[in-house]
Amino acid sequence: MSKNDDPKKPSAWGKGKTDPASWWKKGGPSPNPKGRPKGSKSQKTLYKEAFEKKITVSMDGEHKTMTKKELGYHQLAQKSAAGDLKAFAMQKDLDEKFDPPEVAPPTPDESAADFAAFDAYVELREKFRVFEKPETENE
Image 1 (spheres, rainbow, N blue to C red):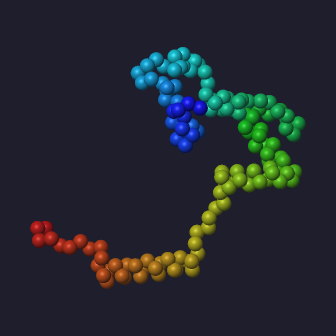
Image 2: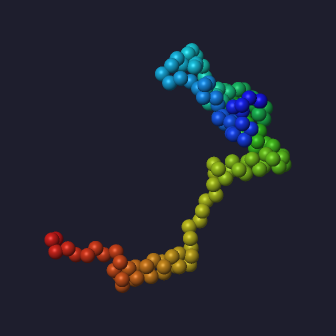
């Protein structure tokens, strides 16, 4: 151990930090001079191409052309109908996301309380005139 190494003194770099000597110099040459090759595809593009690729499958004795994504949804529906609990849970999540249940409008009895509260608000507003602007003499 040298004289400069003090065990109580924290390191200048450590977890989540790097040695400043290894940092890229501002205005210097690029650390990746060739860069990303032209024509290379991102992961998003690769994903879309893989799942939007059309394939021919035999369903109910007929040959159908569909995307891999569509086939995945069909298989999920088949497994769910067959009683697979994981598939049923996934289908339920997708139903909630893409086909939410319709919300019925409130009944007149349920709305009566809202109308009563609104009427009370209007009455108090007129009584105390809180939101009225004072009249100016210049107008």
